[in-house]
Length: 393
Image (tube, rainbow, N blue to C red; front, side, top):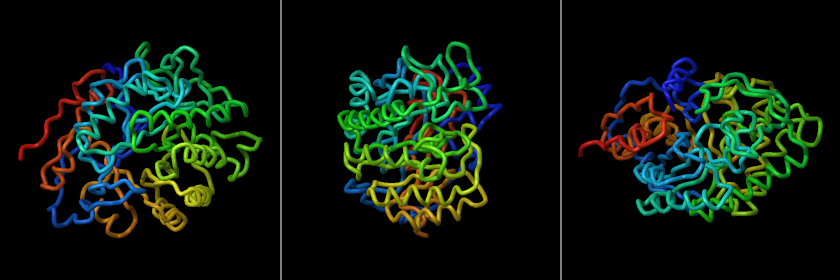
């Protein structure tokens, strides 16, 4: 993006950082990992539904806007291959349909050209010894028409617009428009789009998919009573608001296997103008209880720093006995702590992977971590993307 995107980041750092939720937790200063002996669990192996991981370090999904015309490319393959030492890479958010493309230059997985583009990426990651899941992200109301292809439309559970602005290459930041409320036919179509995109992900060589039901995008928009005003079978009660996500998760699991499906949740984030509400903990316990029955690969929880977040996470752990990934401002020391305490099976790092392609090696050696170039988080091209060096040694 241009200087205008940098200005927007400076003025609204949390709401405009898309998939960098940990930005507000960790300071921008360089930090050092502690000695290797202090992190035995962090660097131990883990079996994720039959997928052998060689550490507990996950690369978190992060929007980088390097896909012109929404098609993955060789530059993206280089970027992900550079970071293949992560035990598991969760890709940037990938739109399952044209309607899901809300940001400038984000990739899709709904046509043949996109499948071929992602095959470049997965081949490069696997050749470097890595594992990679595709994060499927339908943005719903968090969009702007200028970022959509011909035929794309902004849809959401209800006609409730999001506050704030969306960056566009053509006109810079623009207010979010009001979405069209989805009909029951639209709901069924969106579910089918997630299923088709999941099948495309496996065809493209991904090891699995993560359904993005966090950070205020479409799947979470169904969960939240502030964005879901429906009075049909998909709105009103907690169970009805949970229904769409549970159905999507089941349909995707039926299509590609439940052990290849993870789900990302953010019960307390407030990201993308999502209002807080009572009953969050009980609602999410109901969700993960369904995921437990379905046998999904993992639940990925995004931390927000909310006062009652530890209690919510504890309730989720009690209801879901499968692997939990925690994300939100971790360094090596804090990651080892939550792993050794049994609060997570894996820990996801976002921002450190941007500027440290060799993050795992740096943490093992106790080397300093480099800061990202914040002016180039979303700009096109290699600069600020694939040009970060590895540490000496």
